[in-house]
Image 1 (cartoon, rainbow, N blue to C red):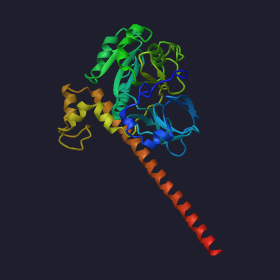
Image 2 (spheres, helix red, strand yellow):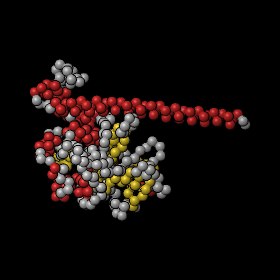
Image 3 (cartoon, rainbow, N blue to C red):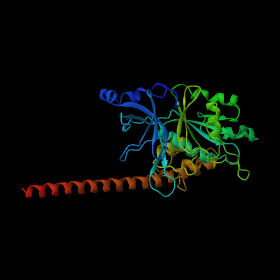
Image 4 (tube, rainbow, N blue to C red):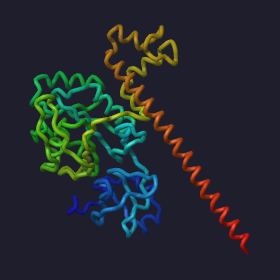
Length: 353
């Protein structure tokens, strides 16, 4: 994209972002979208071309897909409100959230049909997509290596009959044409999926050239090697923008209750008819959810997955909330100390005259 000059509309500009700007913003700053994110800088594309900017100072964070205002000194002045945002609990023991992608129209949840196939993992990604209020599209890859692709596709489709589910061989360009409707001019699609599921091959297929290096599949576990190293937006031949994200080895939910409930809507609907409003759906009498499991109306695997994700997001969400409260209290303490020091300085200066 570095050699191409695109209009803001081609970059995904919408009235939602336009209405956030004042006349002074338009005269004093340039508008651009972050297309690459690295450790020490971000790459922004505007109607004037491509520039490298330092991340904003302070607590404000940015990610690929963000719209920003920057000045002639190549400093980010403001990050526009996001229409959608994907984040997660940061990997490891650190209590913090990690921004993944902003202002996405559709997210393609990629899962391979070999030994990596996992319905619970797909449900985890669906919860994140639902929380961000972005349309999820499930893409099952490596169909050419699977003898029961139709059966597995049906299993995924049963998670949500209204959801779009595709089974493809990412190496066959003809099979990828089914995904072109999500790649139209100004549309942004993102890819989520664990390492080695074939995201890089899918990216290359949609872009029409080898933009990402692909790794060989390990014979012991049917998984590919992690090849993507940073998040970036790329222009597709169909006019849309493709956002590739590194494989997520450790995806944890946080503050995602709404997304989990939406992903398991049949359970939340049943819960409304439980005898107790705070039913945990484990052993309470009059539990409509357990009754549905016993009758075969509800798959027990779905209930186990729902309960696991709800516990996970509750624990991580509480940890993040506690950390935010500590950060806020520390900030107040610092500001108070600075104010007191200034007051003492003024008092000292007054006493010397």
